[in-house]
Length: 498
Image 1 (cartoon, one colour):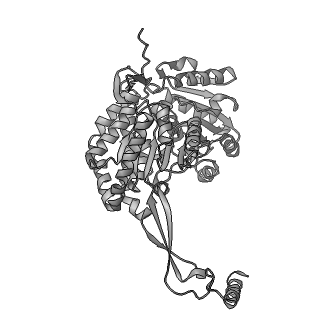
Image 2 (tube, one colour; image 1 turned 90 degrees about the vertical axis):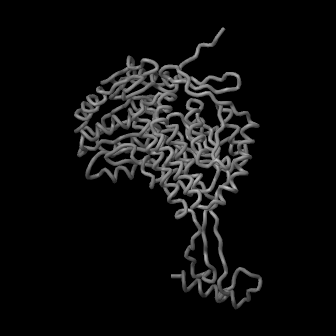
């Protein structure tokens, strides 16, 4: 008896991983599943290539990475169509995602030498006879475990920075979007065909676990907080360092002096782009009492105009079929516990699609407030003032991003959010800013990709001192005399004793 194939659900068949469109069920890709032995071999090959890649130096790697960037730019429509077919994302959204990834490749390639290269560091008077030097050396092989919701932008945000820093990379794409991951690797091989600098291994969760235990020098993971804990546990066995981007439940605060039209537009985009399947997407909104009703009306009007469907629509299907049950449960519980659906509601869930839903007056202890929904839904609750909004925003264990709309106090409010990132009078914009680090705190993880911090994340700090004169106050030697120690004590009292 042939098993029923659920559109979008990964299929394992005859040693191959088959991905299908969540909208149509059309096959999008078929890749060989990597065993634990295959994963180790991939890492071993990457380690052999790492010496060659590191040896190119920053100028050589920059040249290769900029050629890869150019290739992605030339084929942006082709890649966007694959993202659309495999994950269901509207083509326009896929293009925006790829554009952002291209920007990050460009910035990492052009700035790695400046950020990570050897440089003199100012020494202190107490060791004035020594010069100080700092550099960041590549780890070797970095394993990247990527997500399905942004299968280009997110893995590239780790891989491009790791490659620019001099590491080779083994990518384990999500089992929901393996064809996109393989496309990235294959396109890179067209530019760097000499060595296996950037390769991929495919499979389910056990393949990711094998990568964690394969001897890689660092793991960069993006996914759910629950899976992040499993990744950390596997890496802890060998003390393999990890970079974690976990889940999020980002909030928007709308203050009394906000531009409500701009806030509503950004709110709908931040909450419903990519069908709400965005880790930094807006899921909760806190609007102060004086403007609450007017703001809700504007959000409902804008969200109500969005189209839903497989082709040419604003919102595509839910990529992971099991997430539909989570979205339905959150909506139903919010309504049954006293919340009101001012747009959509339980009937908005029409697999594989979920239509825009706006919920108000939802209890703060409900799952729709406290858990990731990952659908085109928004909860908007009324608060007395910005202080109450901040308190509610910070009440959860997640701390990825957030947004504040207002004029006089907006930046001050943004600084008070317990999050790694925040946008003022916009949403999600920090993700596209290649000069800024990206990452969270709490259950949203730790470590950073993007920006200078993102480059440093993929380099081992190496500190070097060099003697340049004899010591006037010898201390770190058995040749020191009591008189030397006395002079040292006197000097310290003069320098620091007041």
